[in-house]
Image (tube, rainbow, N blue to C red; front, side, top):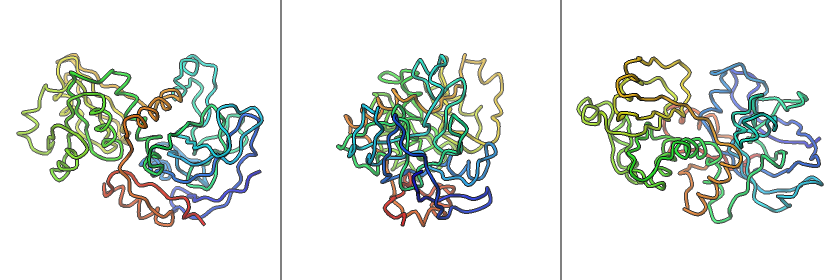
Length: 348
């Protein structure tokens, strides 16, 4: 077994603290890479707190993981020692269901194996995430990174990036479309960057007027303050798509009124409470509410390559791992522009 250092929550009531644990040895098809940076996702906090479902504790969060390969299995062909490598939200899937065969491992019909707060497919041990110094992952679920981009700022692409890239690609959002991005946080700021890169006319919807300057700096063409009834009235029926990145309770019916006929609201945020949607908000305009998770491995690699080609990374604040509790508190208040990333060199 590989001795590993990390930070873990021992229960759903405890803060993260140093914890030593073991990872499996590198098998014939495995890649081990030492973690240099790991992004901090709001879902890390949700899962530590058992907001969505009961967690597996001790829990080592983190699924925006980048680093450098230190060991490969005998049958590994795509990586060698010294390569940059990355892993996102999942580390395995059944590999044989309809969705897995269609490069949609994130929708594996038997359930994907998540990078943390899950169980290895053989049920032998829990999965532990990237708030740690090293990780062992099956080759098929390790991604290549370009050395052209800042490595720390690349880490959030593994979740915030692919979570916004995938629905925009699936619904073929691009030139000639009016796209609204609801919420300007870790997900939203990536949605703006990708929407602009794909050629859409991008509007940011936010309750905070203070975010307008940031939205425009990120490339957004327009800004609507959703707490202003006059601005909401003026924006009704104007968007082909809304990318909803909000994970707190919000008024779906009001936002659906902003869609054109046949418009689609793509939900990638995950509020803890169910949405209250009137049938008439959908019927009057043949509108759709749709959900999207992360992308499959093939699409995630496509996204990383697109980012390297177009010089797209996340806007980040680099932190020491000992400051993770403070970072969580700030994240809950929206006090981050726009993603915290842990410098794992600070894990002593």
